[in-house]
Length: 138
Ligand SMILES: CC(C)(COP(=O)(O)OP(=O)(O)OC[C@H]1O[C@@H](n2cnc3c(N)ncnc32)[C@H](O)[C@@H]1OP(=O)(O)O)[C@@H](O)C(=O)NCCC(=O)NCCS
Image (cartoon, rainbow, N blue to C red; front, side, top):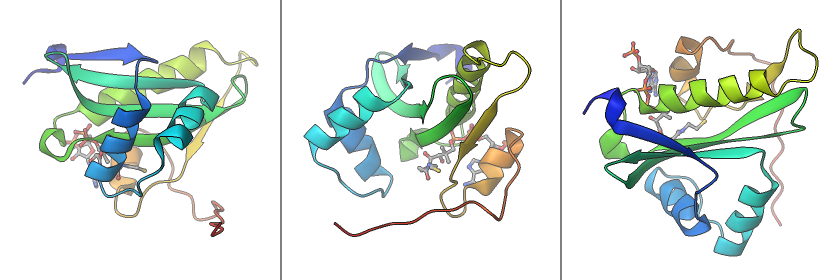
């Protein structure tokens, strides 16, 4: 596989596929209706296609002007470590820069899953100890 064979498409991701990719990489299953609302409420989602087949995704949430957060950068296990995640994150970074309101700087954040910090640091992200996260059982 070469990088040229990977096609990135904006905002075509179906909620069922979003759920499928989450489950395939060990994230919790969410109801499809919930996934649909999440995609609709995000700023952008990107699907990575190889020969027309979905092999990865990434999305960004935030205010669309100053603050951007990476969410669910997910590559199916058999397609990992081939540069697809990098391609998706760089696409999302370009999107944030292009749509940034200040014209001088913009802030892209996110929470790295445990053990994935190396992936983000290779993409130029600082690994910060003072991120905050609260999970509430509902
Ligand atoms: C983490 C993930 C998105 C990386 O995507 P990927 O397509 O496999 O990554 P790439 O091939 O673009 O890797 C880019 C670089 O990061 C490195 N890298 C990838 N995963 C890494 C990890 N878990 N730890 C450290 N480095 C990692 C690669 O070795 C590569 O380095 P190189 O350029 O020196 O060879 C992917 O493994 C994945 O979907 N994992 C499961 C879901 C997940 O946890 N997502 C993160 C949510 S925060």
